[in-house]
Length: 219
Ligand code: MD3
Ligand code: FE
Image (cartoon, rainbow, N blue to C red; front, top):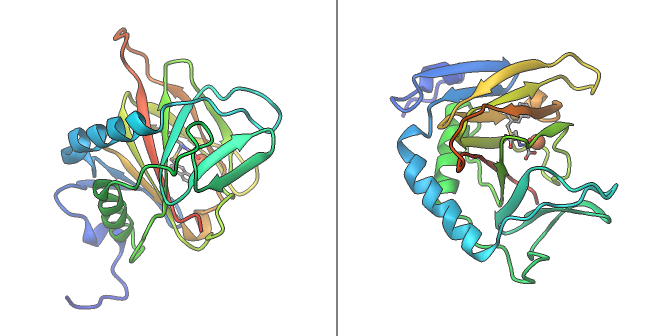
């Protein structure tokens, strides 16, 4: 392969990523990038949840988060009265977190590469589950030791309205609709951008939920 120092992420788009939106410097939405893998991703989520069940963490302030979470990989994201952190074991089962499915790591590496980040090797995957009433308030992802690596997020299930802000909490936010199969990659100057989930798009299907995989290099 010819090394092209000036290749933009748009130039490397493949059939799986017909459309790329740039959210800001180093931040991209790869529309439908995971579309062809939704079934295998979902069965891997189900396998993780069989070992490490959904739970609602408490914030350090003692509030129950509306988003249900679990993890896979070498370390998982934990929140309780002691604070936010990564840990090797599930506090609920006292077992190590289930290992990262190959399908997750491979998809994340390909998505990162498509966005211009080479050799992304995530060691942590937070899995979020949103019911219609769940929200994730504006926050930064800054509990990782490795702030040089990008983050890759994959949306499944119901669509959601994602809030994308700036480097200060008070910066104005943009609303971006994330549909199942959309993959977001952000790093570099956008790594510490404030973001959140404003709402999940309604449906009368009682079973309907949104899932999000957040793949990170935590350590
Ligand atoms: C950040 N999850 O778990 S990831 C989280 O959909 C989290 O479950 C959300 O934030 C979720 O910490 C959002 C998607 C995302 C997309 C674009 C971003 C986060 C971003 C752009 C800049 C910064
Ligand atoms: Fe986040």
